[in-house]
Length: 178
Image (cartoon, rainbow, N blue to C red; front, side, top):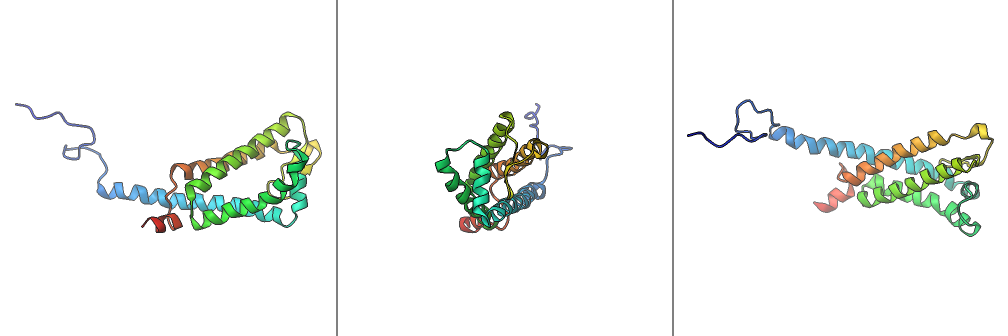
């Protein structure tokens, strides 16, 4: 009488290449370290962007105005407030507090930036996005829309990773959960 059929991944079957317990434990550890790098990388992006704009809020408002999307009544509140939001996101990412929520806000903000840049490009408006300071109208030869969209898409992928895998090393979330 024959025994039950072997199941793929059954460690009791000879010659099976299923990972052992040590390999299964190391995978989450690796993703937590990768998550830490992603979290800190995105924190650097938000910190750099916020610090570059916070020194000159009028210039930040001018960058928002150049997109010609928001009504004038919202230009200053967005231009003056955005650096503080970016710095808050950076601080929360550095500490690892509310990582999934911060990643979600980051993703929405980055999608908004990508849409704004694409909109300016499609409408033929020649601007510097002002993402890392500066901003406003420039000569057409100075626009870098494709590079800005690709850069922000890369940052969006970082936020997406943290939405998918918010558990990272050295995070306040991890300390609070234990």
